[in-house]
Image 1 (cartoon, one colour):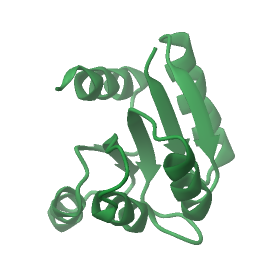
Image 2 (tube, helix red, strand yellow):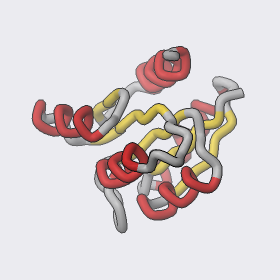
Image 3 (cartoon, one colour):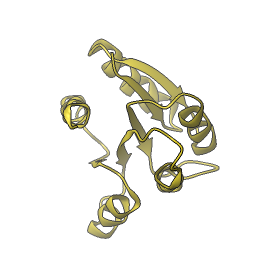
Length: 122
């Protein structure tokens, strides 16, 4: 069962994502800010991270960059989930190392499709 780490500062959004992913059969862990998420990923690397962009302490982009720069870490797939929808934001996320990008508000089915596609990618 793939392990997914959700890093999202909005408790309601985090709970919704966790609920949907657990119902889909995934093992889910959660973090409420970027620093906590980075520490959790380093302690027990997940197969996939769902990262919010705008969070306290470290942003999702900063977490993504630090994970991609850590050559000692098993590299998870990264889905950036954010309200930032400008083409330049999407380009920055992909250049930083995100594997996929989903704009808030999102449909639960779209999230599940992205997660499935990322986990199925070798």
